[in-house]
Length: 155
Image 1 (cartoon, helix red, strand yellow):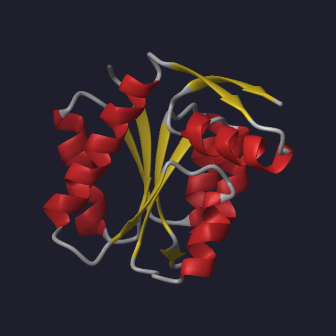
Image 2 (cartoon, one colour):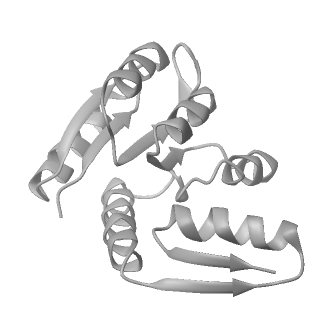
């Protein structure tokens, strides 16, 4: 399946290499190096995925999460930020994954490719989640739906 993907990454080297690799998989890619450009692109285009760096020259990439949510785009965060509190808070926006950029670049690309393929596979399944806690049901719905699962969320 072909997806439309926005890469929001200020490093030209990383952005261009991600673009090249994902285009080889048949995906349509747009690039942004700043928050301002990313907001404009999100508001004027439809994206299936947004690959988001959190540290950008014009601010924190986290600012884009509400825009992505309203646009119904799945977000994969790529960052060197290891702050576990920030990571947990960002997962609350329903992101698909949080990849630390401290390993080999090829493994980052492969992690992104694998996650996109997995979300496609997950969309073939429907889950039934039954729990008497609204908090647990809502949390699981956010987590599982962001990863492509269809579900029924019952108490």
